[in-house]
Image 1: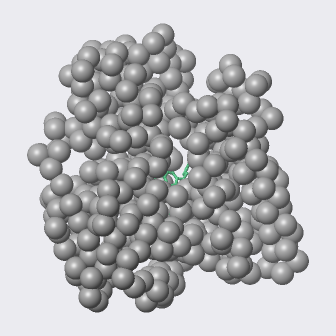
Image 2 (image 1 turned 90 degrees about the horizontal axis):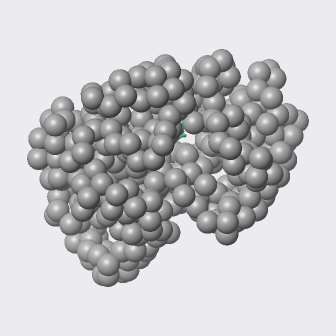
Image 3 (image 1 turned 180 degrees about the vertical axis):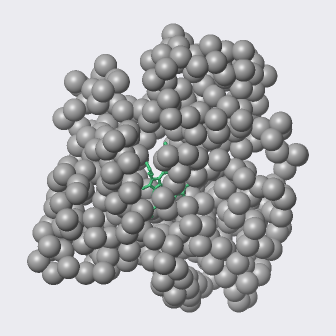
Length: 386
Ligand code: HEM
């Protein structure tokens, strides 16, 4: 595969099956590859890590930077993501992040351990004979945990998988007009839901993130809704993928999961494959000169397979030493939910394999048609005798 083919593959639906050959092909041309005028793909670990930690590289603010924003501004999904901390830069990012980090503390995550254990036990108790582990464990657990954290009533949980599936299409590098329309409809529904939830929390405050973020008026109305949507969607869709990708890897490799395997799952089959940055100044990376204003696609999934950083990079090695994948990003936007996602996987995966040691796939699992948020649609298994 040459560079042009690799780029085409990564921008086409075939990359949803396995982007790794295209990553390997790109790497032959160096860690940073010019793809078009002012547009780069970055696949090397050191380069991706350096860019994520460089304050001169801002998150890709589509409102300001994308000439298509005039066409997109009426799309509610794009608008909400654009108002969230994920797509904001200092000083707005600093203010939103400080507020969210102040309420989403290690203490609060620690108190969720019991909630996670209880929900895992409940999901496993409900399994019998054969099952689709995506719909019976990998979705319900992270949805249950993030909605508990946000103070969303349990009876409202059923709608979020469908809404997130539609919404996250616009977190891909490319999407179709149909995806865009569906994402808009889902975002309108979700925004309406959160408007009512916030009003209810203002009347009856709870010990939850929605109450904490709405209090004090530090966020504008749009920022509040954008960040609530981000927390909900980022909080479960990605963790769902970590669990699903992990189960398939562990079954493929016949491994009983030690806790450390979670880092290796994150590295080997990253639930988030890429993010983007914009160069506010010209920079030199290796022998490539990046001009001011350039857009960079940072291939986290490729960086995590970089043989210059990881010994036997294409081997799944559950107890890999010195394992620091870039799956949660790095620098100012480092994933706020990383400790929570890790905790969910560290509890759920060993519990599943302990309870069902004869767990087997009954068919080939089907990949969700997404390049960036990489996961499975269905995981048909037989559970064996518990
Ligand atoms: C940011 C991945 C789970 C909330 C990020 C970023 C990545 C990421 C790569 C950085 C994006 C960038 O730099 O452009 C993941 C993965 C997860 C996961 C792989 C699960 C395996 C969660 C959970 C939550 C969460 C459980 C919330 C409960 C966030 C938020 C940000 C973020 C709020 C934005 C932080 C900022 O912009 O400052 N995540 N995430 N994530 N994540 Fe996660």
